Image (cartoon, rainbow, N blue to C red; front, side, top):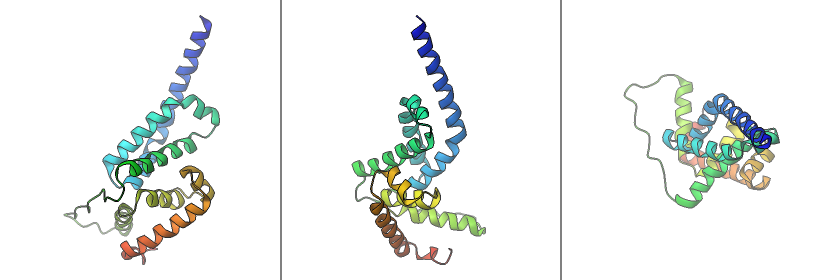
Length: 175
């Protein structure tokens, strides 16, 4: 049965390709997921769910030529859909505990304050800000990743930044 063996060979090649992709990009996707969720465990869950969904369609993903775009779309869609289904109107994260030994590095302190501020935003607002400013995506690319219009991205960014100014005024002098 040459057809079966050839199909299996393609499947093995796709599996190897997927493993290589995950090995090379797992750390980056984990950082993005952490910024989106504000919690290490939720971030791990988000990455795992995303990669399971991507693995199901990997041959089609690599045929499209840009696996990062597909993974990004799945991750952000999954992140926002969880929010829509279960967490509408609730605050998911408590304030982080105080550190026993203060860290004097300005960059680390700023990063911590940014993470805490992002945790106070809605999932959709966080997703828009992470795509626009952390991943440095254009408004058009952000709209494509989130499956919404460019005007929705613009208004969401405006609203999220306004909310950050109110919720985290300590960040205003840092940038």
